[in-house]
Length: 131
Image (cartoon, rainbow, N blue to C red; front, side, top):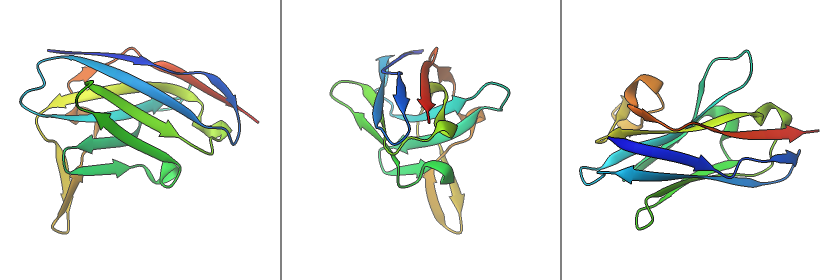
């Protein structure tokens, strides 16, 4: 069992930056895949970024603006969000899966962004971007 606790959500202006964090507790010795998802009111949950020890994956809508990283010593996952837009407004959720979860296309594999691949979820942290 893994427990995930997000923090860092805030209300910011368009163009500003924000970093959200997720502290992971529990047994991670077998390796984990971790990700950020988001859900806006009235919309479906969307994968934002994911990370394994050897790869990262980003949604097209955040490529070049967001960066996912993990501090293994602190067991903390981060999502650095730059050049924020009003459409980035959502509840951001941290997710984790035991083991390496990847999606392979054309012989290249990268971290999965499929919600069904993740077993553990945090409660979410709200990010609001105003224009």
